[in-house]
Amino acid sequence: MASSQRSARYTAALEFGEQQVARLIEHHPDFFPIYTVQGRWHHGGELWTDWTGGFLAGMMWQFQRRTGSSVWQARAEHYSRLLEHRQHDRNVHDLGFIFLNTYLPWYQLTGDQRLHDVLIQAGRTLAMRFMEKGQYLRSFVAPESLFIDIMMNVPIIYYAANETGDAELRRKADAHCQTTRDTIVRANGSTAHEGIFDLETGKFLKETTHQGLRGDSAWARGLAWSLYGYSKVYALTGDEQWLAVSERNADYWLAHLPADKVPYWDFDADLTQPPPLGAQKESSAGAIAASGLLDLAQQTKSPQKAADYRQTALEMLDALTTPEYLANETPGWEGILKHGVYHTTKNLGVDESVMWGEFFFVEALTKVVLADRGQQ
Image (cartoon, rainbow, N blue to C red):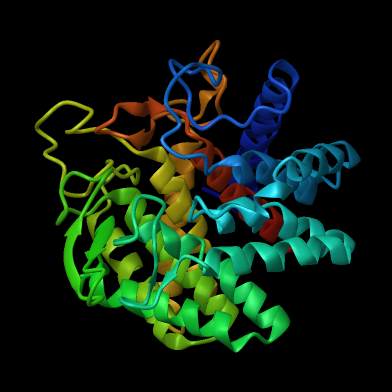
């Protein structure tokens, strides 16, 4: 596909995304959904944990970034303010998701010191989850639990460390990345969802999962979190050991991606079986990985890998902007991106729109469109 054709197609998808988000906030003001039920955002389904507010507000910042719209900026500021109290939230491991997508672009745009202070506090709050025995940031589930998802959140601790010069924050962030790499990132580049530790000794005990097929399987979204998370950490530290982990994740992704370039929910799923445990596509994992691969293509020292990572990201986005995945030809569907998965075993948001899928899809498309304009 020619660059101009691709840019036009991606811009059209982003304009559709703007329409969908505008309708959502008009019909359900000040509401932060997580996943749809039969394409509808407002329902009585379980949250499991409240971790996705930054994705809705973050999309608004992405729209503002691309268009320069004062309307989207006002909306983004309003929805970001609704999240501000969570800078002190010690119940989740998701403060990076919440604040790096909202307060960071807001601060970068305005230079308002108050916004900077919120980011620093959120980093300090997340660092309070650090377990000295074991050297990891504990998940929201239990003190003995480390999630691969946290790799996408630890960057806010690095950000706070970089901005303040706080060596203790940097120590905890480094230790978490090392522990994650050495326990639940495998030699072949795949990842476990969760690691369990002995609270008395700090010894790593086993791989397990909440959302993947098995403890030893390769849950697609978890791999995307790791790929993108280690890339973000490398961007904040310049430490090439983290770049190496991200590339290992990316190489596994490229080697195991289906021919149509949209992953199944778990790379070890039995594709002879029906969804949800079998051949269930997972568009949100594809969107996360596409955005991460676009960054990694600019970070890798290998020209061949750079070309492969970028080409794969574009092929995934090309697939996700077809009517099979983009909801622009699905009447009544309130999300942007169909065929996402939240929690298979709990049957939450399976084959639906999910808010992180929306955000990372918008983010990845925006990166390409702005690059085509000569902007970064």
